[in-house]
Image (cartoon, rainbow, N blue to C red; front, side):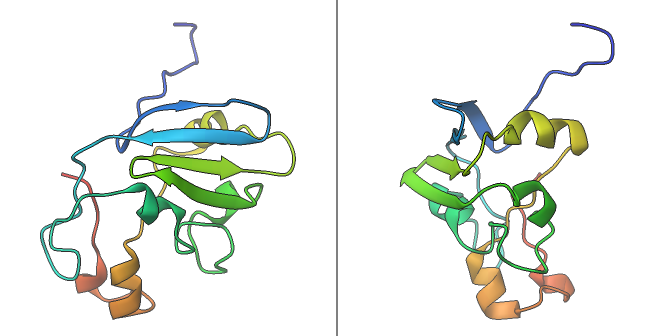
Length: 128
């Protein structure tokens, strides 16, 4: 490893590929679960969770907005594969890894139940 560089070690993903200059295909790690509390009750994280509007850049209050502003579309290709598509060349994974150590995943059920997610019981994650 070169000094000043760090390997990218994803938590919720197994791997990713960039088949062209516009797309990134992200393979989610199987068996990652949301916290065992309502409204998700420990269900498995899937590509549908990542591809929902609460994950994308369109929401003004979304903490991921600046990272995802170059992404036009996020879609689930299958249960564990997410496709990020941008109009121009995208370097989402390396850029994100340099800027921060995390990208937030938000359960759609939490948004539906708690709205602005400001209450303590709205904190639902996939972490340990």
